[in-house]
Structure formats: C-alpha cells, structure tokens
Length: 245
Image (cartoon, rainbow, N blue to C red; front, side, top):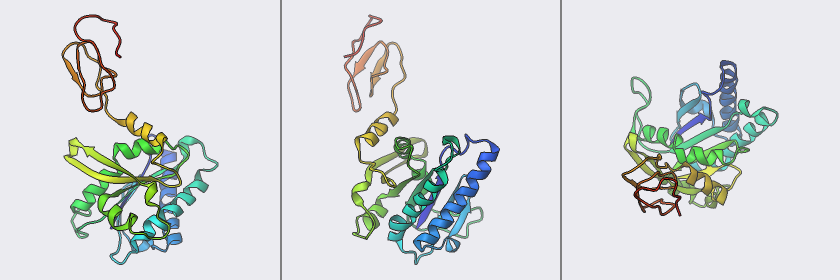
C-alpha cells in the first residue's frame, strides 16, 4: 500500500506559514494514524516539505485507511482550521494505491506504484473537485484496484456511493488511468462537483481563421467543427462580431 499526501497551495504561503503548515501536516497524519489504529511510526516515510510519500507495512488493515484514517485526518484538520484565515488553513490531498515497490533504492522508493500514486495526487480533476468544496479539509483519490478491492468490498464505515469515477489524463507524463475521488464529509457526486470538473477541462484559446476542434465556447473567427466537448455551433468566414449559437 502506498499513500501520498500533499498540502494544497503550499508554495503560495510565505516562509512562516510554510513552517506552520509543515508542523500541522505532520501532527495531523500522526494523530489520524493513532486514532485509526494504523501506527504511522511503522510506515516507511519519505517527507517532501509540503507532503509525504509513505509505504505501509504489509499487515496493514487496508479498510481502516478509508473508514477510520481519512475521517480522523478530517477531524484533526477541521479543528485546526476552525479559527484560521483562509490563507493559513491546511487542506490535504491524499492518494492511495498499491503495487510492488523497492524500499532500498539509492535515492528514494522506486516502482510503478510510487510514480502512479504521485501522479494521482496531482490530478487536475481532484484539485478542481477540492476547490468546489472550500469548507472541506481532505480530498482523496484511490486507484481503480483500491476501489475494487477495498471501497466496494462491503467494509464497515466505507460508503462507495460517495466516490466518483474519473479519468486522470496527464499526456505530458504519458499517464492515463481510471481512478475514484472522494471529498471527506462531502458528496463529490453532486452537481456542484460536476460543474467544477467541467470547468477544469481545457478550453481552446481564441484565434482567428483556421479550424477549431473541441470546446468552441472561446473560439474566435474561423470554421468551427463540432466534436467531443463542443458547446456551440459557430459561423465561419468573415463577419467579425458574429456570435455563437
């Protein structure tokens, strides 16, 4: 089992707030681990300032990560953030995956599961969903295998209906995978979350002439081709100032 946790908007903070955020991050994970009965001291950890990559021991109770650890993490951060200004709050994204890993590599853990978990935690669709719930404290993304083996396994405390299926596409990393997201304490399957997901999809930059394919709501003059994700039918040829229908 692999867990990657990352602090939202860490680099936007000044040095003092980064210092406090690191302390809150470490204390939150330690507190959640104790409350859930998954001793963090037994984890193989690789800190990164604003986050952590951890490989869990093979005898870990996997359902507890979702049924107890994540809710406990949310509880700690809810108390921590209660009297803090928005720019000082600590909100965490967490990715959970599994696979074969080398723990004794020369410069950190190695293995496909490590790389995949790191990409999942940075998925744009997860970030957009998290932003749609500014009062939430923890956003989670699990791989398709974790969803199949743990989320839908019928374990107490896990609500499969609160997970939303997404596709994580990172062309620059040659990565594409089905995953499932959850905002702890919220309903990520709501229309509010769907609107955030739609807003996160890339849109065509406005231009003049040529052919636009895809979402054409921002397209300029020129031929408009209707395709997947298109939002309108446009005119082509001449006619500046003509609108789209």
